[in-house]
Image (cartoon, rainbow, N blue to C red; front, side):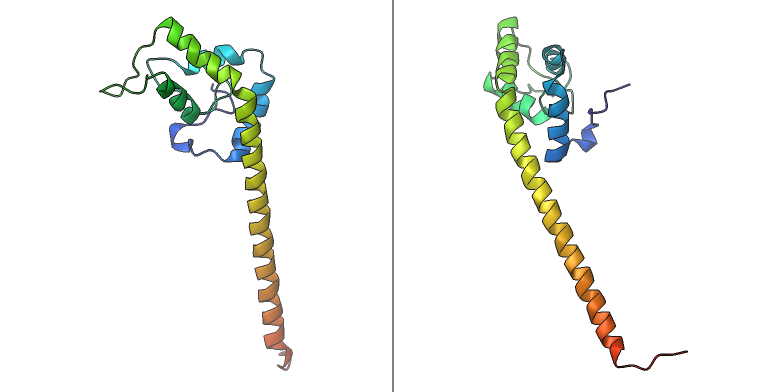
Length: 141
């Protein structure tokens, strides 16, 4: 069974709040580094939040050391030294990335709250309009 924070590839469109929740879990995980190393497997691409990184962040980290996808869709093999550079980079930038995801989650929550307030105001306006349109009519029995 996959961990709760794992997402199928079709669900890779994370919300900032879901990534923040995953990173909160990863921040206190004692095997975050090992999980991250597994997520950087050269044979396949792990999709979802693993080891305190999203799929996109791992792709970007791979590209920083010149190891994006090769022809045929497989990841190019890295030397152990290059692999260690990528893992160290991701571990060293975890707090910075986590802070950014927190900011994005706060913005996301604010947008959701504003949209909910706007919907509620529209509902109240519609209710007032409906009541006002019936105000002049005689009650039917």
